[in-house]
Image (cartoon, rainbow, N blue to C red; front, side, top):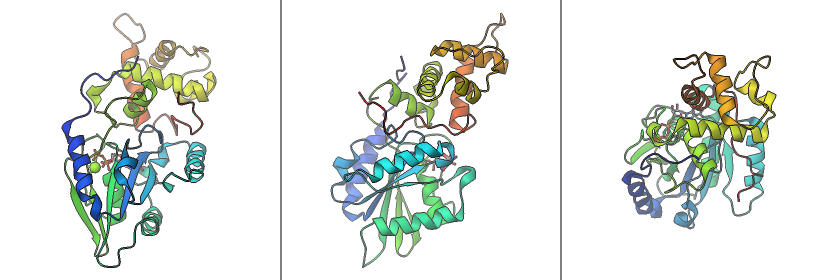
Length: 291
Ligand SMILES: Nc1nc2c(ncn2[C@@H]2O[C@H](COP(=O)(O)OP(=O)(O)OP(=O)(O)O)[C@@H](O)[C@H]2O)c(=O)[nH]1
Ligand SMILES: [Mg+2]
């Protein structure tokens, strides 16, 4: 059972929601940044209720780490929802970033936002921690103007970035759902790096990753993802401890008596997933049963 180990909803998130409400009357567009590997779990909950009439553009960021076919399905699903926001897949950072991405994004912001005939168009960037909000701002600005980094909680307070006289962007800290809406969602948040390291148990989260992967891949497919030797022990079952043991053996992660060190294997799997080392994997599909 995947459960949070300690409070993962600090006061910063409540303050951020209040900040956004304060600024909202002056905002022409809200850019919501989600993670393309988990486009459902990493959406900002209750944003709809807050925004009212303010236009929104959804960015599925880190598309370089997601399965391209899944990203296409997600974009089609958002496009077919008349009540949903326009959505764009993006790679704001990492190895796939390019100048073309910046131009495409600026054009999309201009098209989606309210026109601002007098003064600058004002854009607020919101999303779960570590989704790449500050990186998106730096991409648009063409320079490192907002602090960004590989752990959640990099942005602690609000910061206006004046990109040009006609475009101002507000960077905000990340916001998480107040409590997990289920084991899968919690695992998705942990795997995409939105939760701080101490807030979850790696063994539980790696076990859930195995189950999610087995929903989409056959055992040889998962063995390839985890680089487990098909000649030796590929567990045919959906038994996460057996998979963790096979991974531990493959990587030489052994306990004092030579037994597979499953706890270490789990930590390595979570860390490698976060960095995209296990390949391009998407954890959720638009068609997934949500009951
Ligand atoms: N591979 C990849 N990494 C990215 C991408 N965008 C951002 N990152 C990385 O993700 C990490 C988090 O980026 P930030 O911009 O700090 O994220 P944030 O949403 O501002 O995070 P907080 O301020 O902590 O809420 C950094 O290490 C970025 O380099 C992307 O498109 N692809
Ligand atoms: Mg930030």
